[in-house]
Structures are given as C-alpha cells and as structure tokens.
Image (cartoon, rainbow, N blue to C red; front, side, top):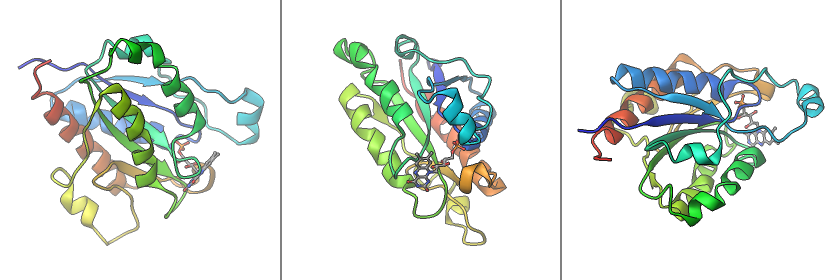
Length: 203
Ligand SMILES: Cc1cc2nc3c(=O)[nH]c(=O)nc-3n(C[C@H](O)[C@H](O)[C@H](O)COP(=O)(O)O)c2cc1C
C-alpha cells in the first residue's frame, strides 16, 4: 500500500477553522498518517481585518496552486460567507486554472470541514458550493459520512455541528464561540476516516 501525501488547507478569519484544522490533523496522526498544514492567501487588506477584529493568522505556510500537485489528497477548511465559500477561497480556487488545464489535480481526493456563525448559516451549502470546483478538476470528494462519528453526529444532548458532508463548528459572532469538545471529536474522527480512506488508494 502506498502512503498518501495529504495537506490540510484552510482559510480562517477568527480562528475557528484553525482550531478545527488542528483536530483534523490529530485525527490523521491518530490513524497513523502524516499531514502538512497550509493556509490560502488572504485577499482582505490588513486595516479591514483589524476593523473586523480578525485573529492573528496561523503559523502555516501559504499554499500556491503549483504546490497542490505535490499532494494526493486535501482536507479543505472553509468558513461560510453568505452561505457559501468566501471570496478568499474562490480567489484561490480560481487561481488553479493553469493546473486544471493540465489535468494536474484529476484523480486526487478531497474532504471538507466548515464553520458558520450560527445555526442555519449554511454549512451544507458551503460544502456543496466547493463541489463544483472539485468536479471540474476531477477531484474525488470524500464525505465524512456517518461511519466514523455516528454517535457524535447524532447526539442531541447539546447544540453542535458536524454532518455527513463535513465536520463543522459554530463560531458565534466574530469567533466568540470556541468549537465544542463534541465538534472537535467529530473533526478528529473525520481526520481518522479521511486517512483510512485515502491510504487504501494506490497512488
Ligand atoms: C463576509 C462574511 C459573511 C458571512 N456569512 C455567514 C453566513 O452566511 N452564515 C453564517 O452562519 N455565518 C456567516 N459568517 C460568519 C462566518 O461564517 C464565521 O465567522 C466563520 O465561519 C468563522 O470561522 P473562522 O473563525 O475560522 O474565521 C460570515 C462572515 C463574514 C465575514
């Protein structure tokens, strides 16, 4: 069996997706895997981010489209904006046109994890909104499904996110809410499941 090269790639403004990324990484490592962490370029100017009370950026290298070709599989961390992927993600994905033209990402694998301010904010729609890009590239979507975190996803003991589409968390207004332990556990389990899925593939 070949060992896949996996990257977690995120955008975060208030830190929620950063925290979930670390849980996804812990899950991959628990499953015996390895992963590199990246963030996409920010498109908002620093003064606007300051007015938004944005969190400091994670200490992750900034990924370039070329770098994607070095990996077999990706977990994409996406905070919702108006119920879909934010412009930073759209901008980065639109910058992959040249690699698309060579089929450079075709046959690779990707899963998604998401955050919204609150309930009804569009976590599934945000995930669905990135599928079009994956499909155009020929990237195979790996859902969280229900097999890795059924009990956690189905729990009605507390308000939480995480669906068969993607692990997720509520951030509250401006990142005022930290992901709950249940949401972290679902993200860790997604990391385990994602690794177990992609490590079966012969690359
Ligand atoms: C421009 C913009 C649009 C947003 N749209 C939504 C939305 O449609 N639904 C929602 O629940 N939250 C929305 N939010 C809140 C973000 O989804 C939330 O702050 C983000 O998921 C937190 O992730 P982060 O802490 O990693 O930045 C929006 C935030 C911004 C800045």
